Image (cartoon, rainbow, N blue to C red; front, side, top):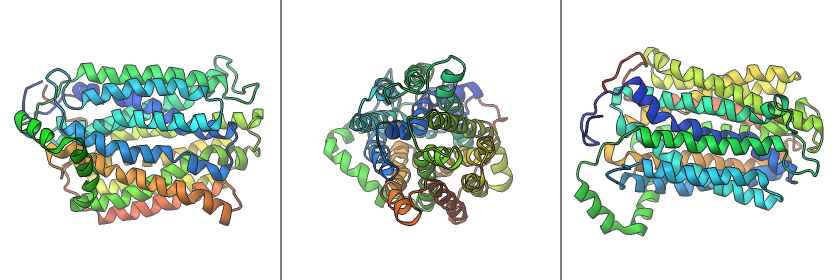
Length: 450
């Protein structure tokens, strides 16, 4: 790879170079997918009630709110002649997340599981946030849509495998999905162990297989770090929300309603499917655990759809624009979530997951492709961290109001949380129309220069 500065005109990268720099997301999504598909199950198994689930899930958005802007800020200001700018954070996050994934399924009490969620989510965020800035660092503007789409592909692929692991261990290897003492089933434990190993290996592949461009002025970078210090840097990272460019503000509204919907889905799908479709709320029963395993398969399907659709999004965006592509995808997701209310056969949920998968692929790529086109190269990580406020703030709002809404207005019936999520996705889609996008069309067919 040519040695050029981060803000210079970057050479086009080949397909395999983009593959290597994105491969770590395969492991990161092992962590997130295991969390999304199994944490509510673990909480309920350890005694949590339905209306408590959103508050218990609060760890995920709060750690994102605290960790992502700080990591983004400091990764912009890091440089090591061997390890580069972002890769030290990839590696540290991978080590910590792997440890957390091994510990999480061994929780024996609800409070232990909650603490482990905090540790696991914080660790995943350490390695994940710099990956978003990595695309802006390494790729010329016309390749960034493809770069984020490649990340979406690995996110989908990792989640397919990780989400299905409890079902696979139960049905292919005969490992029990019911713990005799009412604890965490062995199928879930082994899924987390395998996920921890996959996380570490995939992220370290990117660490060792990629090189980074040095900053324009290394001495200036060191002087800025020395002058601001730790606390000055922390203050600046959180003040970024008041300095956002116009397009970033517009995308923030889209992100808010998109991620509110996703959080509702992740928290309540297990409870909604087991009660609304399988007809049980007994977490110790075989029927409940069969339904919970099926939710893992459903999550694998929507992530599989996302992995496939990721390659089509740049092509569609070239034809109809990125914001219209995102609008259509979010409408598909909203329809998918609402349709679950009308389903009685568990197999039909897979059709609903097609719509969710299309939305998920777009959520993971289109906003970032639009955003990276208008951000300064030397503050890419900083602004990406600030942008993630609008991933975590809606999750905090969801954690604060979803349980209250279900208990107060919907008789504590979980399926209505998915309907609320579907409506939220429709709103997000409509808000795409206000986004002022500076578009650069690109497809994966365009060949890069090593």
